[in-house]
Amino acid sequence: MIKGLAITPPIIGRISIGKVVEKNGKRLPEKDDCFTITTQVQNKDGWLLHPLHATLAEGSANAKIRAIPVKLLFNSSDLNLRAEYSMFDRTTGRPMCVGDGEKAKRVTAEGISEVDCESPDGCELAKTGGCKPYGRLNVAIDGQDEELSSFVFRTTGYNSIRTLTARLQYFEAVSGGNTRHLPLQLKLRAKSTTQSHRAPVYYVDLCLRDGISLEDAVSQALAEATKSDQAGVSIKVLEQVARTGLGNGAFEDSEEESPAIVEEFYPDVEAGGASGQPVNQTIVPVTTRLVGKDQVTTLV
Image: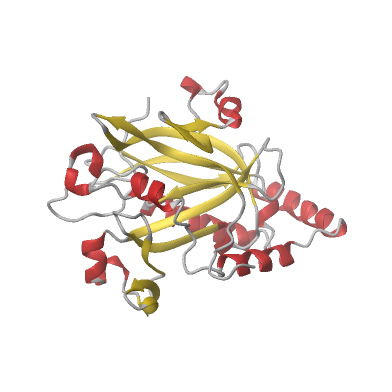
């Protein structure tokens, strides 16, 4: 294994609730009120839709996807969702500092150093550098034709990260550590807050599929886990390999991916207007400071 290179779960597509569009010669984030499933290929108009997008949009209201049937790759919650405080170099797109609220890895003149992490509210560098929570969730979508491959949902929204973290931990606990076999779905939800001026704020939730009780879901997961064990599939070894791979690099996101991440979630706030409103979140006016929140839109 090449040292210094994080080995992440194989990705065959993306899940988003927003996009980047070109307006007046500038590429700006644009909010949306539904899921979009894309490939990993872009053209001048943006990311190309994955065939599963048309399949799931067919028959839905206004052809908008607001729920996606999924299964997880792992039983361990922290492997399915990795979330950290992250700060990127706005010019190069490279990660500059990534921490968990206790310790952080930071790029310095001497190389990568481990420093104390005080979270964005307690760190002066974070306040000026645009540090915010950043999460990546890997899931398998029903109908994909590749095992151990995934679609990635990236977000800097507090509501999405907090809700997904809680759901994963709850499902892992209630299923006896068999989360991978639960019939789940990603669902778009809405809430209103005073910060959103009582307009809907949208975030992503992970829940059981419609019409399935918790008892039935857990019973199904246990049966699937037993069947998998009898077939010789070792999820525990898979998780060990995945954990080793993720820990093999200083930062999870590669230099190849980082510019697109910065463009989508960390736009140049000095430009103001739409360019200061990252996809999947709301931003307070730039006259105060940047705060990671989910997007504000209105359902059609």
